[in-house]
Length: 133
Image (cartoon, rainbow, N blue to C red):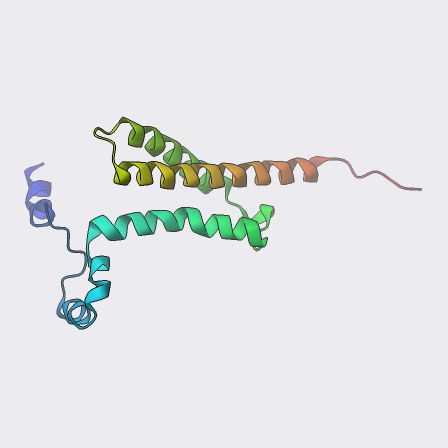
C-alpha cells in the first residue's frame, strides 16, 4: 500500500492537468483558455460530453438502435443514477453540486433512453414476420 501512496503522492492536491512546457507555453499565450488546465474545470466538461454526445445522436438519428452497446449504456445509466443521488447528499448545496446532479441526471436519462431503444429494437427483431398473401 505504501508503494502506491509513494507513486501517487506527487499528484495529491495537484489540480494542474498538463504541466509540460508546450502546455504551459500555450496557456500563457492564450490565458482565456487556461481554465482548461485545471481538473476542477476540465472534469465536469468531460462528464457533460458523456451526456451531450448521446443526446445529439438520439436527436439526429445517427446512432441506430442496433449499434447501441447495451452494457455500456447500462453502466453509464447506473453511474449517472448513483452520482445524481450522491450529489443530493453533499452538504452544503451550491451551484456546483446542483450542476453535478444535473449532469449525472442527464447522463442517466439519455443512456436509460438508449437502453429502451435497444430493447425495443431487439423485441421488434424477434417478432415473427407475417405472410401477406
